[in-house]
Length: 325
Ligand SMILES: C[S@@+](CC[C@H](N)C(=O)[O-])C[C@H]1O[C@@H](n2cnc3c(N)ncnc32)[C@H](O)[C@@H]1O
Ligand code: SF4
Image (tube, rainbow, N blue to C red; front, side, top):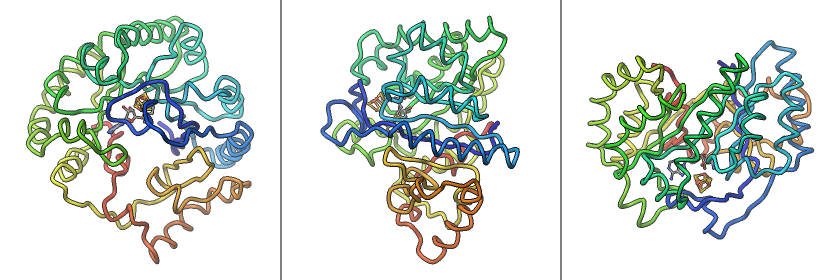
C-alpha cells in the first residue's frame, strides 16, 4: 500500500476506439505527450520527498494509452531506481512478451482494462481478438511473477454498463483464472463523451441497487478464488446518486494528502477534474518542501473559492473506489 498515489496522464494518444471514451482514436482532440525531462524532474522531487519522509509513493501512468508514451521504458526504471514504485493502467494492446517482462521486473501494480466477456469487450473497444490476447498476456504476467517470486499486483478495471452488468460475476471468475489479484469498477460515465452510446448503456439507479445486493455474496465467492473485488461501502452510494443525477458536493477531500493527479501539460492537482484549472505547474514544485505544503495551500485556497467540480465530485478515489472492503 502506498502512502501517496500520483497518477500521471503522460499522453492523450490512443490506439483504440472505445465507444465510451474521450480519448478514442476516432475523436479529433489534442494529442499531447508529457516531455520526458519534466517527468524525470518532478519524479526526482517525488523521490526526494519519499526519501525525506519515509512515505511510499506509487507513480502510476495513465493516458490515453500510457504504453504509447515514447519514453516509458527508460523513464520508469530510472524513477524506480530512485525509490518510487511504478504502476500503469493499460488497454493491453502492447502487452507483448518483452513489455510483460519489463513490467514484471519494474512495476508494483499493473491495471488492465477488461470490459466484459470476449464478444462484448472486443465490440465496445473496437478491437477484434483483444480479449483473447489480454487473457494470454495477463497469464504471462502472472507466470513471470511466480517464476521471479516477485512482481506487480495485477488488477483489472471494468467499466460497468447495461450490456455487461449481467456478465460481471462470470467475468470476475475468468479474471481469477487468469491470475488477477483484484478487480475495480467504474460505472459508465458520460462527462467526457456524452451521446447515444452513453444514453443507451448508462446504468440506472436500480441496476446499482441490484449490484449492491449481489456484491457481498460475489465478494465472498471470489475471495475463495483468491480475487478481491475492491470498493468501499460509500462507493456504490456515490454511483447510485450519479445515476439519479443527484449532485454530491464535497467540502474537503483532504486535497493533496494521499493523491495527486498530473496532466500531460504538467499541472499537478488534487484530482483529474481540478488539475487544469486549479493545479500547480510542476515546474514550480522543485523542492520536496513544496509537496509538503500542497495540502494546506489547496485547503486554504479552496475554502475561499471552491473549485466548480467539487459541487458534484466525480473523483472515484474520494468515495473509496480503491478501498478493500
Ligand atoms: C481513459 S483510460 C486510459 C488507460 C488505458 N488506455 C485503458 O484503456 O485502460 C482509463 C480508464 O478509464 C476507463 N474509462 C474510459 N472511458 C470511461 C467512461 N466513459 N466511463 C467510465 N470509465 C471510463 C477505461 O476503461 C480505463 O479503465
Ligand atoms: S479507454 Fe483507454 S484504450 Fe479505450 S479509447 Fe480510452 S484511452 Fe484508449
